[in-house]
Image (cartoon, rainbow, N blue to C red; front, side, top):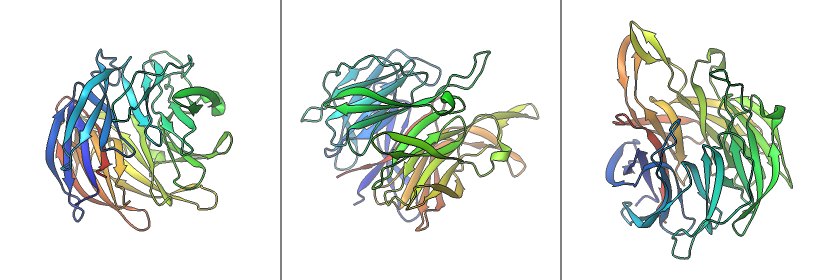
Length: 383
């Protein structure tokens, strides 16, 4: 039996899949309707529980119903809602737990905010822990606990200039973390936060290194985790062809391989152009980029990009063994392919991770997203 399950959410519909490890094909096994659209999910460190942040809001839409739910993972991978959903203040964009799953932490982006909830012994979610008031800038996008379990990182994306509003700078906010309480420690704002749009971070499994996806500039960055966080020491493009930059080209998720030798970043795009009176995809990059990691310095070097065969690769995940990768293609678009306009559906793309870190495309499982979005996809341990 596989040591993991594959899940993906289209709006409030949360689906479980089995993955064929030979050809990368997926078979839908079960589904659960959540109280609102899934925004992000995180597994308990030891218990078969998946915590999901839900909202009827979305990008550019505040919504009115926001929850965090605990889902029990059954032996066959199906999910059951445990207890009542816990109401939240606004739309949560990210959820995580501390390293031993004593607390749930959530990030919100309209306005930027965070919250911490204790996890009870049975895995249920307790009352919010009161925090100090923090000035968190514009558009927080993730909250993640560092490997030492005593620091929390909150990337704040900022916004590009638009509609007569000047650029709103980004930052990385660093907090001390103890017994559910956050104390602001450090603010990272290279160039005062201008032309710096942080989205997500991930940590090296054995070295004091942190990698950042910079959404608005299509870059990866590297930081050292000393007593204070130092960096960025490197900033590099994630694109195969940065000279061909098109509108709506953005960076998405970032994940370090379990072996610490590689780091992966998703390049996502959904911009359109006019073609004979019809709106079609503009052909920007929807790829996963592979970076090798220098074992002495931590420097990332781009070694490969692989097309996902889909549009707007918002999230992706690496299986616990480090041999497979699944990427979520969020929306559908018509695109010009081999001289004809073809419909490209939303879906899940699977890849084999080779020994050298590069990806081999295996399969795209089409998903009818309708007017909704495939907003999250990932592997989840069943042990």
